[in-house]
Each structure stands twice: as C-alpha cells, then as structure tokens.
Length: 143
Image (cartoon, rainbow, N blue to C red; front, side):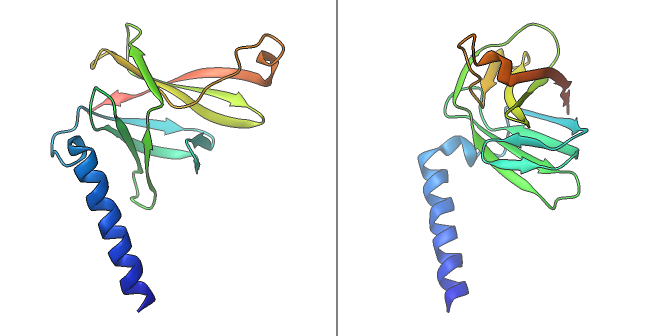
C-alpha cells in the first residue's frame, strides 16, 4: 500500500512539473552534450561521482532545467538554473570550482544557445574569494 501511495505521489508531482513547465514535455531538447568528471562534483544538491555524463538542456530560456545522467544510467538528476546570461564565445564548457573543499558546478556556457546558465553563486567579497580555489573549465562535447 505504501509503495502504491508513493508511486501515485511521484506521478502527480511529475505531471505537475510537466504542466507547469511545458518545455520539459517536448521531445526536442535545446542542447545535448557530454562531460567527463575526473573527480566528484557537487551540482545543485547532488554529488556526482567521477565519470562520464550526458547533459540535456530543456530550453534556452528560463525556466531551464539541466538533466545530468551518468552514461551507465545509474544516476540521473535534474537541476534548475538559478540565472542565465549571454554566453562567452568559444566552446561549450562547464565551470567547476573548489569551494569549501568541494568541487562545485558553477556555470554551463553554451555558445550554441547564446546562453550561460548559473548553478551556484561564488563569494563576491574579496575576503571570501580565498575560499574558492582551482576553477577549471571542463569541455562539454555537443551531440
């Protein structure tokens, strides 16, 4: 009985999200690509272990969800971009920075869409900037 109740709640929640954000229901994603993490990365509230992942962006506009899936299919998360701006010219990339001893996904730059999506805020005060170390730009290969 508990399982049926939980399944119904999950189905209702998924239907609500799809109705609230119709772009999620469309079969055509705005962007699909792949990225490799050599170390674990925190993206939103999830910690992704080292490995290969696919990234699917639902829309080039807000609200825009990123779905991140491990290639083996064992892990899948959905993250809402906190903000977006114009893309930096060049190649698609994911900015990852060390913050409080964690590697954090900060932003996803997608020149193909003309957008850069922000997933984490880093300190802006000079005294707090020392907490951020080793930012790196990981290549995201478009599919």
